[in-house]
Length: 256
Length: 256
Image 1 (cartoon, one colour):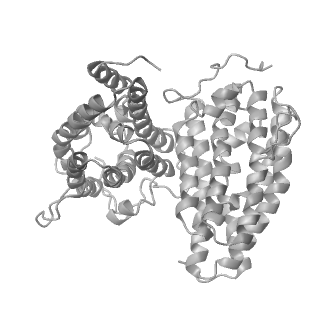
Image 2 (tube, one colour):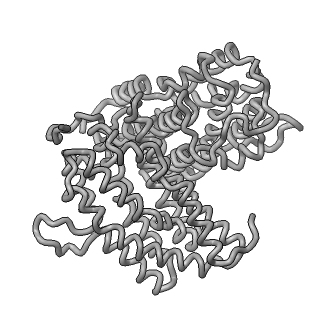
Image 3 (cartoon, one colour):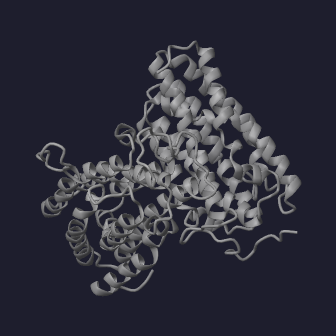
């Protein structure tokens, strides 16, 4: 256990965890962004990542559901709207983050019903997403808030991803990647709030330690999902039984 | 959805799932049993598998806790005693499956406190074990019982494991593997009961389908843990941050 830190020292420690542990450092992401992934790998990434996207509103509602503070509940409710939308979008327009992620899987030629069913995802992806939801349900409210702090680092990875994927994969279009247009300002607003909350509420060394461990935990969740993708779909390919196999869906875009 | 099966047809289908999906077929187990694992891999296997062993009594108590049938609760209570022991063993004698697993990690030179803390386990192992506990808590009682049916296949894998590990690793002794002496008769008694329960209680095609899916789920849990081990500690070694690194603990047995 470290000594009590000032709020700004705590922030520096949290940013350091991101700099050394965030999944932009994972080999799979480096391959994804630099054009080295096969179409099957890009599809597997999007299909598995859908499981994580789909758990985010569940996770956020779980946090609201255990929170006695109307101000925090109100703030956190915006995340629900960002992910689930308003239901008022025009025809054909994706409303909310989850719907925009489905635009991405559509654009990659994945069957929408198959994606939504989650049955072709790697079991490891499902377990990791579920572990995140459980963490938010079972740990202290401060740890639950802190586990969202990976968003501090997401604008950067999204910038790398959009530029890299557009440049390197002919079948990826700006429209397919519409999800990522909206996320950076949302993530900045969300993570500014969460960081400020943690700096104000982690008042003991134990609480500060718990906040840092919550961020480590969340980095583990994201890293573990990429380890599973890399093992299943990387060079030596060990796809577990019943998981998505490249070529499984009929209407795939051509990989020119 | 298949048509309604006779109880014996259901049993045949369940045994077929084991024959094609059980983790004795995983490349990591083949390497483990045939002497191709390094000491670090054997240690990583035992340290990670401890996380699973430690979750079993939690899982079993979770099943008892949601069960209205005294006969089923009584039957299931024996599993708790098998894993947690009676507390009446003589000094130095391991009492119960969890304690005997620690004899195995002791024998492999792993620091006992480090093993029990679970902090050096792969995140994927923790998520998989947690997914198993959640499954037993949240699904129907019939599915919770059915998820234990991998024990139908464990006497065979244990036979292969004990013979293979004794023959192939000089640092593995019969005493180290004491855990596996007790398990086959316990697993047979447990799985006979659970199989009979499922055959009697799965009376609709939907229920039979759910029973088979529960066994698939459990096979996924076991398979996923080995995928994570293989990815982290296999030839190309991608050990995630903060997980066990071979050589990490001081008092290792020599790998002659």
